[in-house]
Image (cartoon, rainbow, N blue to C red):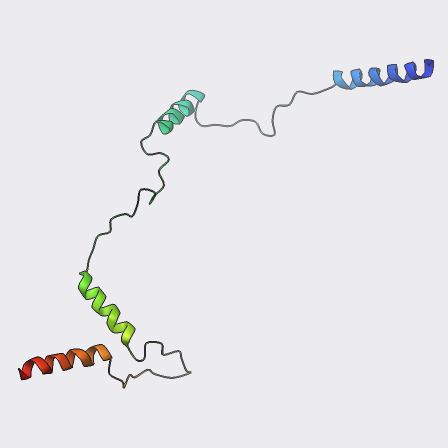
Length: 121
């Protein structure tokens, strides 16, 4: 019994000695700031009270876009490009090749036929 009490007393004494030598923690780096605490607090308050601070761009629906071309012209260009017989052929399709389209575009052919048909009437 006496040896267990002796070991406990030694353990407590060593803990007390280690605790007496403990240092205070002051952080990894010394705080460096160009602004005072009051300036940072004022900036935080202004940011917290700002209008629409949590609104992400586009979260309120689609944004309006300035239109530079008319819709019908863009649609006609897209239809013509989609109907092109050689739309998937590019200059890089074959080595040292040039793409020269010899096939008429169906959209152009229909427009020409419609023009000729209306001129006959």
